[in-house]
Length: 308
Image: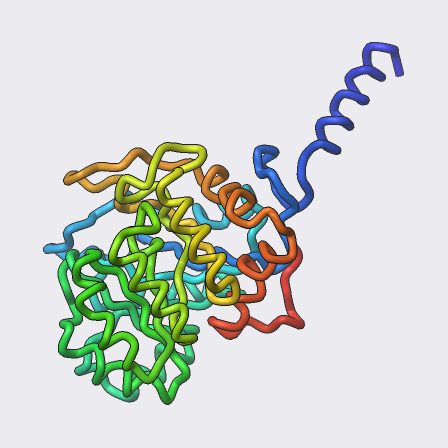
């Protein structure tokens, strides 16, 4: 080996050593733990037709595309969330869960869903039902309680994505539900004084509420890499109930492709690195990325897949 070759070899070795373990992208700023879960992603597959009247019709984003992201970030588990684009047809979400392996899902169904269909969805890896207002409203507010009563026997939860004022109005109802409730995307809070932030805090304080510390780039949450407004809300939630906070990427960021009120497409590594800003303590970050998702979605702690 020549001196030039030796210097090149040493340079490559140092670069590899500087790269955090478990992440293909060297910009990931921490050691991603085994079993780290991305608890909020969507799949858009051309094999499954979009609803003609769907508000969001983003570019296709397949399981193969998502696997590439997993390798980049070092995460290994995931939760596929039914997007508004497919309405109550959960075929694409079920297909994605079956392809991804160590995955769970959240469906969209209304109160007219049959018991047989609920059992089929559960067998396919579904562990919750999403209530979403503002993007087609496939489930009405009046259906939330009857639906919650039916899914309680399956051990499911209700997942909520709605405008802040509606979340505040539904606080009493959500507190009364016989199932856990998880709120998407920081409840769209960009500080700790907003009414929806206080609603989530009361849900957390009740012991039945959970929140996804996701979507920091949405709803004027601030600018990358810090997303200062959204980060203040995330830190507040984590300080209040670290055992009921879960991280998600919101990949492939369908709201960033929305014609109305467009949002710049975020960088997924930046979004993952926010967890270090929010939770500098490694053990606490492990809880948010691994343990909380295991508890909430039913992943087996004894079978944590090795980080990619």
